[in-house]
Length: 589
Ligand SMILES: Cc1cc2nc3c(=O)[nH]c(=O)nc-3n(C[C@H](O)[C@H](O)[C@H](O)COP(=O)(O)OP(=O)(O)OC[C@H]3O[C@@H](n4cnc5c(N)ncnc54)[C@H](O)[C@@H]3O)c2cc1C
Image 1 (cartoon, rainbow, N blue to C red):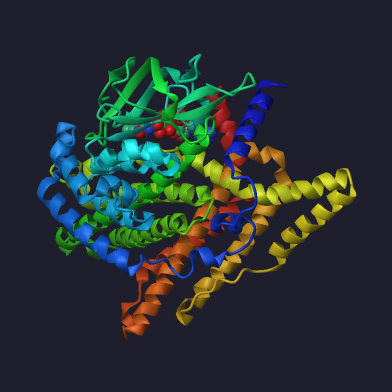
Image 2: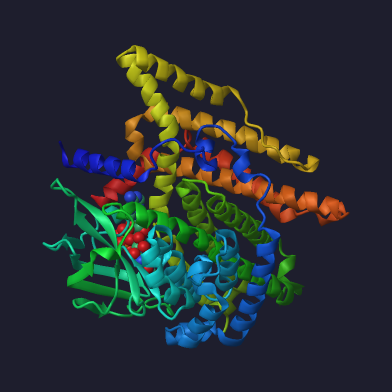
């Protein structure tokens, strides 16, 4: 086998390990790739149950009061530190254990409610939101999800109050985007009582301030010469834990402590293994799914801040004897920001609700949320910056800090390129398998094969003849719903065509993948917006609101999103890919 084939086999094996095996309910995003609109997951728009809403409102009020009084984002950035007083306060409000079970001292909030909390923090300070994410969304997540009762008893109570802080350590020099390539290794001791860990981790948020780190290391697979990743709970007081660089100086989210550490013959008791041995990659990616949801919430908060700042400025700054808001090129930016902020919130709420309602596999939706919201926020910050002109460049306004803080979002927790490719490939896997069934049977007919191929063929055919129904309740939204249904149908058609045209080489065709993923993300975003708008329209009608309270931002989002989807699909056949690749290859040599 060539090196490329070996790598491909490795990737396929990893993907098989990760993708949830066995029958399960069809998720919304996977449904899109099959030409279905799985309405049960997305309609009606999810709501936080009234009892929890009361609790959430109380928490948010307390949080706002605390942040108003104690959180100074300028000082956090300048001093490159989040004061302990702030961390303690967040702990008191419950933020550091928001979704942890009440039995272990947490607040027992749903992911939806937790996202509202993170949106509030994200609207104020990028450093603080990343700190909270590193501690709660990913740092202690593996413990909450995969810990035994005993492990939770031992570790959680102090972590949920913030007395101890948590961190999540996956990244290494060799394992960045290629997260499965972890080199840190863990050798079992002869008596089997513990593992001996060796290796280095870098770019780890909270590493230097954490008392408990979830560390991914490679362990031998018993009875074979293979290794697999296992998750361990490591504490910095273990002999051999060496902090190489506690706070790597950096451009943005400067208040967070991003560290580099080594483990040299660190003995970790076997009781500290989280989840099944050898299943650490799945543990890590499940943890990151939660992180990506709160990423969406933080980006939504920051985008709302951009909108607020841009609107204030556009309404007050005068040039050519007019306030800036009079100029259409400024209006264009403000309208797009409002539309995108509405969509980001809807998509975050929906994705969080999928987790809360027990969808088994939400990897696609969380990946879509992460890519979509981080890209939209980047654009919003850029627009708000542009509206502010030269004033944005100076440190007395928050925008230059927001630019620096937001730049990590497109890189961290899975770079947007890697996730874009992931969305396309995982999404196309279902229909791709069905085509494979048909193709293999054509080459080698067998009785069982023909039966399976027939079923697969019927699925594919069914999706191509039927335009999915998008069941909105508000008559005035039917036209949008019909357009969305047609676009899903066209999308499915395009996916089928790409799979037939390219077959296995599609695995490497990232420009094709990008268009498919782009269309899928906008289909999901539009669905979330339509669902939210439908719920709000219904609510408005029940409360006798006038049609003047029409939500233009949401409607604008749908129009722009549909236009983008049409553009992505058209680009599948009308593009400059060959010229682009030739130009890049020439430069790269
Ligand atoms: C401030 C900060 C905090 C962090 N906190 C944590 C943490 O708490 N825990 C943790 O484990 N990690 C953390 N990270 C690490 C972060 O998750 C990684 O930086 C990220 O996964 C990317 O890895 P890399 O930096 O090695 O980039 P690389 O893997 O070298 O990738 C560089 C770029 O190459 C491109 N690229 C890579 N692979 C592909 C591909 N297959 N297809 C197309 N393009 C590709 C992408 O554009 C990517 O951005 C943090 C990083 C930073 C900067």
